[in-house]
Length: 130
Image (cartoon, rainbow, N blue to C red; front, side):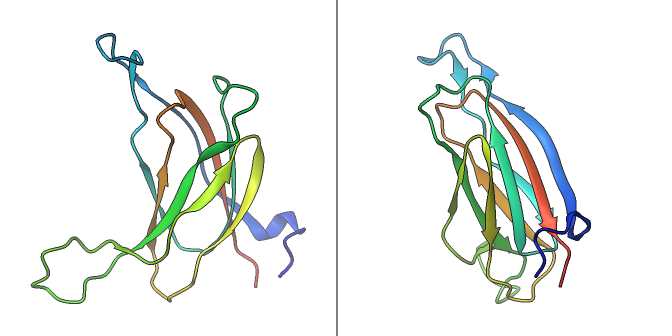
């Protein structure tokens, strides 16, 4: 693997997520709901930042893969199988994430954002190299 070669990385997502205002709620907003993205690579570099985060906050969220298959057409559960526990993503830096490659593509990555973050900017890069 050649992580240092910029040509091996493709941008999968660049977005800013914001909490919805809710004047009647204790915090004054509804937390940012989980975000999902469809991916075809299992090695990622994920950057996160928040202009509303306190300087001592470190956690941007957790990411976990959901494989799109079902063991049976009669299963009572949706075909989005969690294959491993979530991995922490940190604020103000890129985090290298490597999920287990089960050979199921595409898959859905779920991003869970802590309730105290009112705004989160994300960049997700997927590794295309060999």
